[in-house]
Length: 517
Image 1 (cartoon, rainbow, N blue to C red):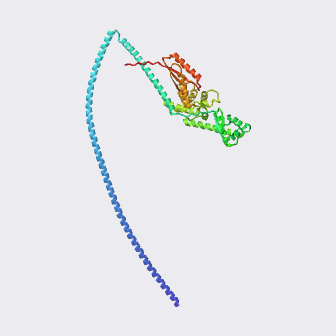
Image 2 (cartoon, helix red, strand yellow; image 1 turned 30 degrees about the vertical axis):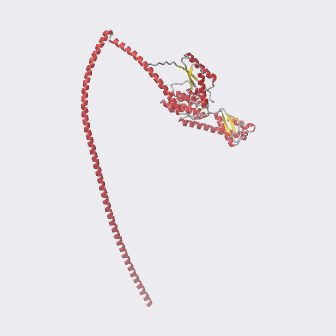
Image 3 (spheres, rainbow, N blue to C red; image 1 turned 60 degrees about the vertical axis):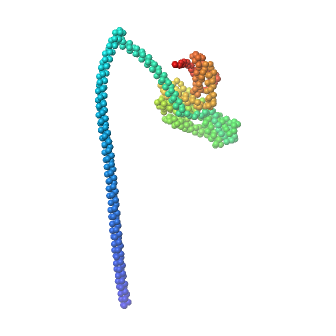
């Protein structure tokens, strides 16, 4: 029992002691919390006081700035008002001066009006006096001549009419000469300007093409057993293959440049492939022919894009591409057509016509040359028929039909294309001829003409297509000049070889000069 009681007392004592300890700790915690709260309140009060002081300072600074800005605005307004006052003062002074000048001018005008009135009155008096004098003179003339007024008027008008007719005829002749000279100068200037603005290179083609081979052993493979390969190739392409002793080269010969080019490409493919036998030859030639058609179409499209002529039928574009493989006097026909297109367009622009339509006419004027091997007739007629069939305008068809024949002046584009065609074909360098040969041929023409009696000077023009001969008016007459022209033309036919025609023009002129001192 005693032990139990002791334990109970000890437990009670420990519980009370724990209570006291807890109470003491709670008291300490409350005191710390109060102290911390007081510290926080003091800090918050200090921060609030500091923020209030900073806010007051910022408000004072803003007020000072606003006051300063207001003062600046007031000063600016005052200065602006002062400037306006000065401007108004100046304008007022100017208006006062203008008013004074107006008053002076009004006085001057009034004085001028008075003078004019006096002059008008004086003029009226003089006119009345002149009318009286004219009447007196008429009466005197009637009495002296014995003619009535109507007869005298008729004779006067007749003499005036004769005099005016003579003067008007002289004026008309004078202006006709001036306009003829001006038109000739303008036309020459337009053509020369167009030629100078466009100058295209022309390539000279031959009737053969060369194909390089890696070794002479390849020549035997091209010929084949008993010549079967070369015969199959010639039959499929329509060209002649020439194999001679020339090392590393095989020659492809043919008049048709398209077939010759296709054969050259096909032979290059066969050499690169190495398999050369009749069936492979036919396969490669057929494939190359299809590629050639696509290449021709591409060339035609490039020509259309270069000249900016759009809306052409695909067949016309294909024919344009074929002109790349056609030459005339070794002048590439496609490049010639493009040059004619540009020159014709420039001439049309110079004279105020449609340059685009003129370029179209010039580009298509020789289109018949691409089909003249397949269709009977001359290339102007063939080209006109093709263009008409594929819906080209009348001007284009007429230019193709008439650029070599009689020109229809009602269609100016035919005249323009004919002039551009002549410029392109006859200018030096357009056709295959070296400069030395060209100069030699010109000198030969002039020397033959200079050898005739009475010839003073001879000039070859139009790239040798025309010769102008100046003869002496003392040594020749009109009849002998005509005979000289005929003899020179016959001499050219006998001594020279040339394409086309040579026009010979003989000029005989008489001049008389005297000095007035």
